[in-house]
Amino acid sequence: MGIALLLLLGFAMMLFVGYFLSAPTYSGPVSDHFDGRKFFTPIETSLNRDFAPRF
Image (cartoon, rainbow, N blue to C red; front, side, top):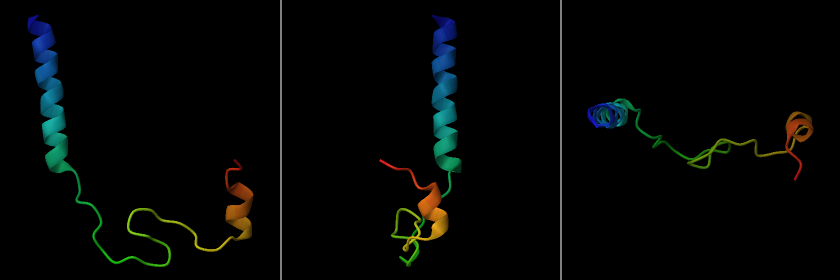
């Protein structure tokens, strides 16, 4: 039981430290290549057409 508690405490400390050391989210303006959450190519080019996944 002591080892499990120690492992749980170590995991909790890693989450705690990781949360406070993580970078803030982007809060800049939306552009023609960024919609506020994801980067993308706004037009179809030969590069992104050839490598895009086909569903």
